[in-house]
Every structure is written in structure tokens, then in C-alpha cells.
Length: 173
Image 1 (cartoon, rainbow, N blue to C red):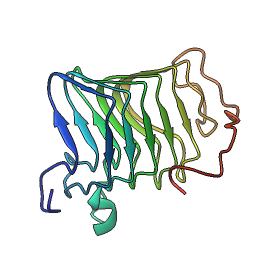
Image 2: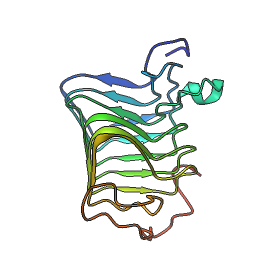
Image 3: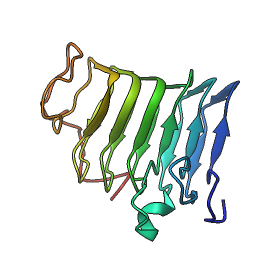
């Protein structure tokens, strides 16, 4: 995307499979439908590294800042992935499912959720809190999120530090 209104810097998918890929250093547009890295409304993205993608609304102060990393919507599925060091929110989720992912080191929330579900994931070390939940149809289950203010209706969530072996190095530094 060239930074105009509309577009995804990296990958937009509504069906199919995206497997074992790196989606890095992309620049998204400035509307609430745009993101830097991955926009998935259908299909499956598995074993993905989303790193250093930018939601340009964050830079332009437009206030929309949907996600630097990914938007998960519709029937989209994001599985076994690392979403790290992107600019904006880590993931904007308005549907679909997120499973077995690590969401780490964001300028805003790691997860902004309005609908959909996230299970067995780690959401940690984000500057403006781990989780921002709006609306009532989202579900967070069996996740580790030290910055989560309370268990938002899911079950099995923990708020302890995940104790990464070397949390001071790597993505997002």
C-alpha cells in the first residue's frame, strides 16, 4: 500500500492457506479497514512471523490505528504464529479465531477484540495494555496476559509473567 486510504501493506486473504511465511516491514493505509501485515477474513494462516509492519494511521495521528500486525475477521484463522514488534495494535479481531499465538511488543494494545475468539495464546509486553475488549461477543480462553485487568468471560486465563528465557532481546526491541 502506498499509504493512501485503502489497502494492506502485506497480505490480504479471504480463502486458502498461508503457511510458514514471514510477513515483515510492510506499511498499511490510513483507514479503519487497513493494516500493515495481514488481513485475513477467511482461510487459514499458520506458522507465520508477522514482524515490523506499520499501520500508518498511527504515524499520521488519524486515530484509527487498527493493527500493525493483523486483522482477523469473518471465518479467518490465525494459528501457531508470532506477531511481534509491529507498530499500532498487534491484532484487531472482529471475528474468526486465533490459536496458539504469541502477541508481543506493541505501541498500543496487543489485542483489540470486538468479536471472535482467542485460545491458548500469550499476549505480553505491550505499551498500552495487553487486551482491549469492546462489544460483548469476543472470547478469550486459556491465555496468558499479565496486562489483562480481569478474566473477560473466558476460562482458564492467567495473568502471570510467561517467563520467556530471554525477554529482553529479539523482536520488537
